[in-house]
Length: 308
Image 1: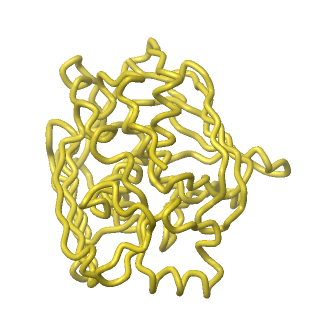
Image 2 (image 1 turned 180 degrees about the vertical axis):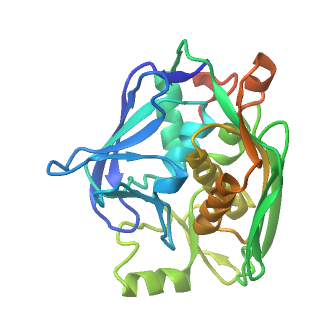
Image 3 (image 1 turned 180 degrees about the horizontal axis):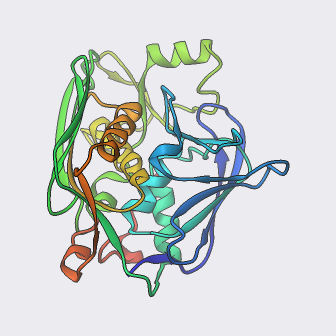
C-alpha cells in the first residue's frame, strides 16, 4: 500500500548556499500524488514543481528542480532521502523560498519529523521500478551504475587528497530501515579550501562549520565535536545518492554503485536508465517486495537520537 503523513510537520532554517531563511512544511497528499514541491512565496506563475528526475537542472553543488515557468527549489537531496528512507510515497512539500533549509546538514531532522508524525496507509497499491539491465555513466575516473537487484543496494567509494578523508568505501542494503539506522545522521562535508572558494563566489552563505557541515583541512577535522562516524563522508554520499535516486518517482529495485559520483552524475544515470529501452519496468509490490523497501517496518521508536 502507498503511504502519506498522518499530519503535517514543519521545519525552519536557512539555505546552505543562499543563506536565505526558509519555512518548509511536509503535508499529507492523496494516493497516486507522488512528491511535489510548492513554492508558497510565488503567486504570478506555476508554483508547483515535481520531484522527478526530468525536472532536475544541472547544478554543481546540490540537486535543484525547476518547472516550465522557471520556478526552482534547490538542495532537495536531504529531504528527498528522508522521504524515500522512511517509505513516504505521497507528500506536498510547501516551502516559502528557493532553497530547502540545511538544518544540521544531514537528513536526521527530517526523518525525526516524519517518524514523529507517523505514516498513514492508503488504499492504492504500491509500485516499484525494477531495473532489468545494467546502465552506467562515466566521467573520467568517476562512474555511477545501476544493475538488477531484488532490493535497493547502495555501494559508494570516495577518494580525497585530505588524509582525514582519504579513500572510503561502504556498501549497504537499504532494506529494514538501514537508511535511518546507518546513514541519515551523516552530515554534508567539504574541504576548507572549497569553503574559501565558495565564500569568494558568494556561495555557502548559510554554512556554519560544526553546525551544518563537517570541514576537513588536510589531516584535521576542523568542526567542533568531530565526526559522528569515522566514515561520515562516504555515508553522506550514500545519503545524497538515495535522495537523488528517489527522483525516479518510485522505489527502485536495483544496485547503485557510485565511484566519485555526485548529484549531476546520478541524475545523468537516471536519464540514461529511462532512455534505455527495456532497462526498467513497473512492478506492483507484493508483500515480500514491500518488506525489502527502505522504510518497511519503521516506527517512531526508530528515530535517530537528536544530536547537536
